Structure formats: C-alpha cells, structure tokens
Amino acid sequence: MINIHKIMKNKKSLVLICFLLFIALFSSSIYAQNREVKIFAHRGGMLEYDENTISAFQETFNKGIRGYEVDIRMTKDGYLVLFHDDNFKRIIGTEGSIEESTLAEIKKMKTLKGNPIPSLDDFLNFLKDKEGLYVEFEMKTQKSYYNETVLAKYCSELYNKVNKIKRSKDTYLFTSFDKRPLRLLKAKDANVDLLFIKSEGLTQAVLDEAKELGINRLGCRVEKTTRDMVKNAKDQGFIVSLWPGRNINDFLLGVSLGSDMLCTDIPVEVMEWVKKQGSWITLK
Image (cartoon, rainbow, N blue to C red; front, side, top):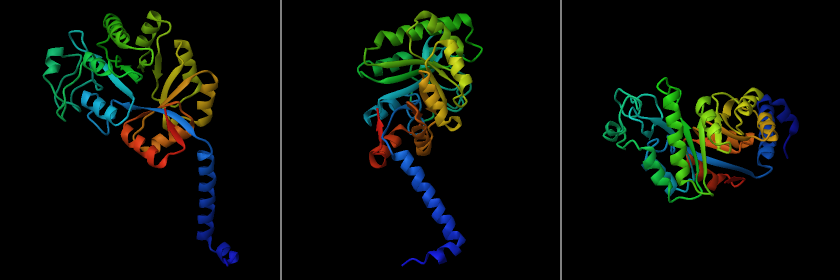
C-alpha cells in the first residue's frame, strides 16, 4: 500500500503528481469531443516536396491530399506563373525575379531540386480533372511592379482563367495580404470567394478590416490567436483559417483553437498522424 505521507514529504513527487493531474485535465478537455478541420498543402507541402511545382501537387494528391495553396506572380510579358519569392535566389539559385523575366525565360529555368516553374495554365491543367478540391490562389502583388494598370490585368487574367475551369463542387479562393486585388475582384464579382491574410493573430481589429472589405474568410497566425477570438469570429459569421503549420504541434494547436481550416507545410505527415493517433480528429 502506498504511504501517502512519504509521497507528500517528497517535493519532487508532489510536483510530478500535480503535473500529471494537469495533463490529465487538459487532455480530457481537448479530446472530449471530435474535432473537424480542413487541411490544405501550403505551396503543395513545402517541407515535404519542391514547393509550387506540379510534382508536389501530384505527389500530395496521390497521398490523399485534397487542398492546396499556391502563389501567383506575373511575368514581364504578362503571363501568370506559380512562384512564392520576389527573387530567384532561394528557389532557383540565381539573380532576378518573375516580374523581371519573360515566360520563355522562366520556362528554361528549374528549381534547385530540378523541377520546372509551372505557369498558371500548367496548374489549372492539373486541376481540371480533379473535382471537389479546395484551392487558395494567393495574389503576390505587394511589389512596386504591380501598379494599378498591371494589377487590373493580373486580376482579370487570374479571375477569368480560374473560373473557366471551376465546377460546382470546387472551392477556389482568391487570397492576399494586399487589399488592392481583393477590392478589385470584389468589385468585379460581389459573390467571389476571397480570403484576407494577416501576419498577426486574430483580433477584433482584423475582423473589422475584413468587414470593411466585405470578406468573411480570414487567414491569421496560429500562435498569436486565442480560442475565444476564434469563437468570437465564428459568432460574427467568419470562416477562420490559421497558419503556419510547420509541424504536428502547430496542427494540434490549430485544432484545439477551433479553426475551420489549417494551412500546413507537412500535409502528408499530418494526414498520417491523424490516421494513427488522431482518432478524435476528422479531416474534411
């Protein structure tokens, strides 16, 4: 029989008991009910595959992923391509940028991992026979290259091409940190699906910004957001997406906060973890 008096005299044991009780109580609150969340592959799963490449999208699709986020830039001669950075150094290893290059020049380039840079047409061709996907098209238009004339052409081209292949079961969103393209698309189509991205946690001020834009979807930083704020946003009619998702802990934090959507750099790892250890989580 355990001598409780000896345990109480042992401070280390007491601390351990308190810690275990805390974990038990915390776990019971987390696992008390099933959670549903939609995950999508950030740049096609940038920590698992070569980001923003057709090979990344195909590999993740083959593994069961049905959601993507891609980055869209415009070339010097007016073509849309998938590329995140505003220069080539990290991804291609050379000087220059998408905006300073022609499509023909970009078609001759490869990433450091040996993959071509896809045009928007290449990506839409990948999507066209895959119904029911969730896709975020992030408009990377913050650079000075995107003056009002260029931006208008960019938005029109992106909107028309994406909607040409969109079907009723597809969820295609246009997203940005930049309010200008969001406003242009909203003026073009009052019912267009938009998401406003912020590099900060979810707050009422952020919700008010989105309301001013007429947007009901938000993408905010997971580590700076509270559960109460997510609930508050949902009560006001918002759909909440959280990022970044660099590891399983980021994913679990987003789930515990009650996010509707989670952007992840490791979509396949997350999916496999849920299959093995996350029976209380349903990936929509």
